[in-house]
Amino acid sequence: MTIAILVATLAFLALVADLVPGGGSARGVGALAAAGLAGILAATWFLPGTGESFGGAYVDDAFTCYVQRVLLAAGIIASLGSIEHADRVFPRRQGEYYVLLLASLCGMTLLAGARDLVLLVVSFELMGIPLYVLAAMHKTAREGIEGATKLYLTGAVSAAVTMYGLSFLIGATNSTRFDALHGASTPMLALGALLVLAGMAYKVGAIPFHMWVPDTYQAAPTPFVAFLSVAPKVAGFAALSRLFVQAMAPERTAPVLLLVGVITMIGGNLLALPQSNVRRLLGYSGVAHVGLLLVALSLGTVDALGGMLFYLATYVASNMGAFLVVEVVGESDIPAWNGLARRSPALSLSMLLFLLSLGGIPFVAGFWAKLIVFNAAWRAGMGGIVLLGALLAVLGLFYYLKVARAIYMEPTPRPDGPVVARATAFAIALAVAGVVGMGLYPGPVLDSALAAARVIAPAGTDLPAAPTAP
Image 1 (cartoon, one colour):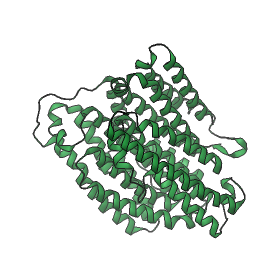
Image 2 (cartoon, one colour; image 1 turned 90 degrees about the vertical axis):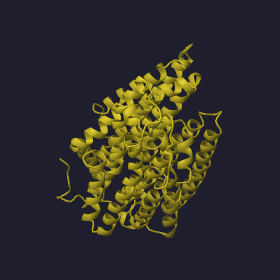
Image 3 (cartoon, helix red, strand yellow; image 1 turned 180 degrees about the vertical axis):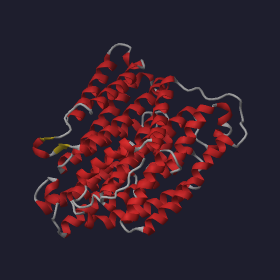
Image 4 (cartoon, rainbow, N blue to C red; image 1 turned 120 degrees about the horizontal axis):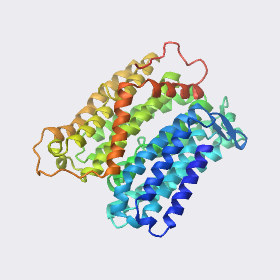
């Protein structure tokens, strides 16, 4: 609970800084948010890693700590990457932007440790409502309002479906605690679980609840989209892990999770293939990644869950970095990227690394993430899923390399390169460091992910020959 309190305190400080005369139009609010989140991230290594709050409704453990660290890292990159955009596009609303961003992040950190259905709902709404406002920060642009409206409407439906499902869970167990779900088996409980899964699928963008993703990604402020594309997914999968793996028997929830995961993998890749807009391409590719993450979640073993958590960390660095490069280039249609390598070699190399990581090419972070998940599926006896995942990974290279081809092989239409602001360059550099660092030396992050997975995985699923990366 300490991390959530610190993030909420930082949001209050950002609000106070915005009230200082001239503070709302300065870049200091964004710098305050980034520096504050960096300090909170550093504090996670010194604060007690275990404990309970509200009588066990919220718990601090290795799983909570890992997820919160990933979320804080995403918040740092988003805060840095937003400084130039906020100052240029809505200079008098910077404080509003960062307060909302931090409020949403506070809800996400609470989700990581939620062990009560009421706290789960409150955390989801604290995460979601600021996102609706942030998506509409370009309030004078028609596309921005359209994307924000779609996000809001689907989010409202998601909240309604989730709470309706939770009412069945509470009715079946006569309790709001996750512990009461363990071992319970009634038709009411099964119906409630399906409704809750449907509601949460909106949050992570799983098919068939993904319809808001491409339009919102294309219309909302790009630095915010970088955050929206990863952080809610991390928080959503934390909640799904707590509820469907730790609280419920995985053997009962696995078939549905696996089915949704396979459909999402296939649909996301097929929808991404014909895209000519980088934002929409990354949006649909994110849907495909969610499918693979759901497959890992359905397996419920320590190595699969550890692979899922490691995958989320690599996805944060890869996808956020890619969207920040889109922000610098300024245009998202692929032809606008022609010859970028001749105009901005460093930026082009960064984008190439992000694309290779998303595609799972050795030896960047995404390669190890996919390899670990595939290996977990193979050890679980799902060779067909491994074959399907490998084929879809090859398919994914076609649309990722369309962007790389435009950058490196097409003639440039103009000689001048994009100007990279200092804060944005630093954010992209952090993302590159994550992609390359976890690619060359994934051990520390993977070990932390496996330790977190042991908290939520059922007993007896920690196989002695679990894979480790060098």
